[in-house]
Amino acid sequence: MSNLKTVLVLCTGNSCRSQMGEAILNHDLAGLVHGISAGTKPQPKVADGAIEALKLAGLPTAGLYPKDVEAVMNEPIDLVVSVCDNAKETCPIFPRPVPRLHLPFHDPHGEPLDSFINVRDDIRARLIPAVRTALGL
Image (tube, rainbow, N blue to C red; front, side, top):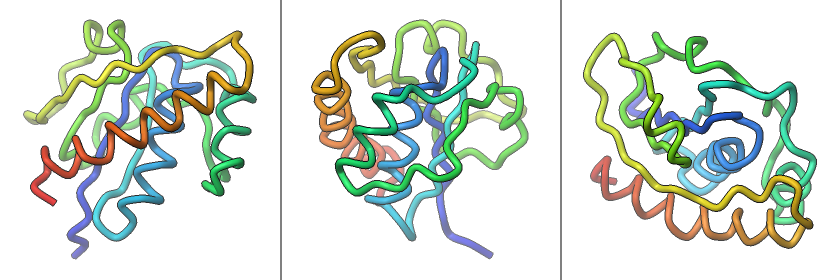
């Protein structure tokens, strides 16, 4: 039996901020947390800027793809982190009570790579300690 805590990073499009959150959680809290991500209205693909920003930080990008929140509804989720206001407002009701945390991050879509890098660093700086605190890690 695994002691990993499952953290769902939820966003609207599941193409940028939530994907970066998933990758950062799985890297920085490896062995403690299993990060997954989903969107309330997923986009067709992960944003190129998000992939590039993750790669520049040496973070793995294999297996990242947008998923609808319905696809993860029955996962044993220990914490839901919404990273945009829209996802916070439209977050569905899960089959069992799940603690929620709202950490909004800037949406860098349509902006230069530097903006994606800044958002990646902000996610890393705020998401990791917030998840540690919320889960008592």
